[in-house]
Amino acid sequence: MGGCFSKPKPVELKIEVVLPEKERGKEELSASGKGSPRAYQGNGTARHFHTEERLPTPHPYPSPQDCVEAAVCHVKDLENGQMREVELGWGKVLLVKDNGEFHALGHKCPHYGAPLVKGVLSRGRVRCPWHGACFNISTGDLEDFPGLDSLHKFQVKIEKEKVYVRASKQALQLQRRTKVMAKCISPSAGYSSSTNVLIVGAGAAGLVCAETLRQEGFSDRIVLCTLDRHLPYDRPKLSKSLDTQPEQLALRPKEFFRAYGIEVLTEAQVVTVDVRNKKVVFKDGFKLEYSKLLLAPGSSPRTLSCKGKEMENVFTIRTPEDANRVVRLARGRNVVIVGAGFLGMEVAAYLTEKAHSVSVVELEETPFRRFLGERVGRALMKMFENNRVKFYMQTEVSELRGQEGKLKEVVLKSSKVVRADVCVVGIGAVAATGFLRQSGIGLDSRGFIPVNKMMQTNVPGVFAAGDAVTFPLAWRNNRKVNIPHWQMAHAQGRVAAQNMLAQEAEMNTVPYLWTAMFGKSLRYAGYGEGFDDVIIQGDLEELKFVAFYTKGDEVIAVASMNYDPIVSKVAEVLASGRAIRKREAVCAAQQDWRHVLAYRERILSSHAVDLGRQRGAPGAEAKPWGQVPISCPRIPQGRT
Image (cartoon, rainbow, N blue to C red; front, side, top):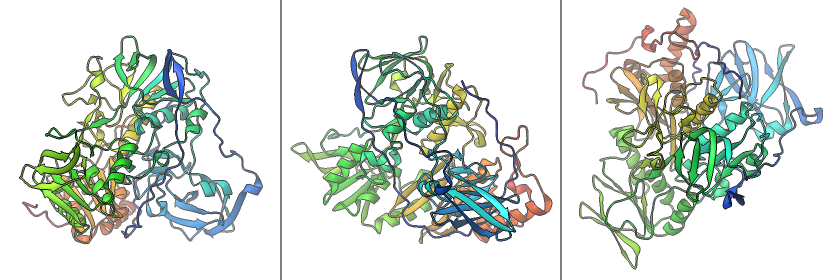
């Protein structure tokens, strides 16, 4: 069903040192395409379906009239490991010099448009400074997520010590490239009751799985089913930009699914999975047989258990309709948000300029305390308070009160009564796996689906990915974890698809998370659960800082604000299989992280020391950076 999977060749890690810069304003919240399902008949039941249709794509061999060529620099203008944006008249190109060779690529990350020249060049790829997506500099291909598209690769030639770049005008304007995909050779016309691949859940994991199968040449039937009424969309934007319309959130236009024969069943709820007969049953009685199954059902938001929870204007945010209704009802009114996690705080930030008042209720002492620690949490809390957000901490909701069924007050266990016309509940989520309890597919005590590094469940031919799984995190000693990040769902979907095709791929992505509040973005990489210390460089009050989260002697996560691309630098180090020791983080905090990186670069150049396991090099022993001699102060004992 597909070709062999070849691991990338090992290359030496290089860290391009770029000075931290101020935030470049709000990141783009752009998405293109529309998606409106249409009905079809299957087993006599009306359903929603998207059939095959050809999608216009750029011609692979542009005419000379479509091309532009120009000399962009002298060969000595760039050192090895340097990147530069160059202008070709019709658009900019990212010029890269690596190991003596020049490469020319699209200059913006296709995900949200970040300038890749501000990113990290390492191991033959460039990592986005905003959200960590990685692109191969030789091909432009997307190697790590988030996002779906790759970069265009342009022709480079050297004549008389000058570097020339030749590019398609159309490609310069598009700034993104969709990988070549197979078409479905056995369209069902919507009547067949069997499919080769069935994907339950149409979030990032489900969509990337379907696309990866097509990219790898798989041409049999693929069916995606979702509880949503929409085609796959960018769910993280719901809480960051509540009044964005569904068509603006679509990850792919409906023509894309038609062109590549990826069938989408919307408003389709699976109620039973029969693994013995390889068949699923939908709520309306429709039955569908499969050969391979991916379970990516995601999670369901937790709800309040107090009196009045069923009252009008009490919301969890799960769909575009939820988000749109919240912002419509909140204008000029009093809003209470229960929960100071990422969703709750993003909603609070978005509504401050629209609502009359915004209040946040939280059981912890500070927002984000378990995730980001006390000091970072307090700094972010102060930012919210400066924007008129009122906090009620270390308390819970005891009752919701209203008049004629509409919310008017939120009563707290501290006896405080808060005026509220709208209440948004963001107190976490549970795995949406109830339909699997009698299936024979393994679930843990919390309802998550345990998988191995190949995203394989306990049942052969059944894979799982996304928010509903626990998987072994390679660089944390294969600890079984649940990481409900958008970026991780992408990576898991791809690994599942590759192993459906027997390619023996394994999960090795470093978790990468981001959030945006009041025009400022927080980046986070790693897995910091259980951290016992936080080492901070920069100024928390000015919201320009880097926070290293350590457990014992090792850095296990990093967060930053207004300090790009430091999080992408650390993510690239962790992705290479190297450990960062606590004393190095202390040294970074006291001497400045960029100086430590520069010192490492000199050590690597002068001694050619192999510091760690290179990606794809079997059997190599991982060594920490700390084994390279460096003058760092002793770590103070009892540090808090």
